[in-house]
Image (cartoon, rainbow, N blue to C red; front, side, top):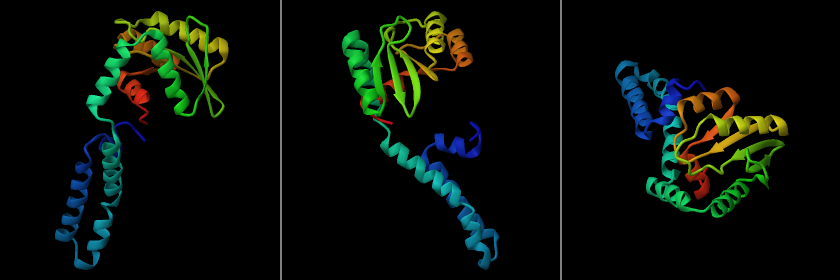
Length: 186
């Protein structure tokens, strides 16, 4: 689905927006169509109803923002040993086979469904994240033949590093996604 398609935008909007569109379809059909065609006009709003239900379900099951902030604050206070243990448990809970690596560039090797992902997270508390750590991770990814690489951090990554990560296909795990992983939320 295209990022800026109507349905993609509605999936990022509050659920009631889609339901309002369904109501507009129903009212428009009632006002503009002959009585025998009103049901067909109302059916035109069905895709919006489905999107509204999906969005309502997602909003209902989304973690509380205060819990996300608390999880990130707790992660920022952890030692490397505690953080790496908790992250490892989170990956295992999500169905990955986890192997710790003794590498400066990558800390974990994750395997799920035959796909291998290298994860670099030792600099999770660093205030600045530049290209160097990403360059090392990309090199390690190629050396090990991993399909994916993920860089975990609490602070924002520089614009230059973001561009480099995009060019190299490295996933940057933003803080909200890290918090959801630690909390066990999808």
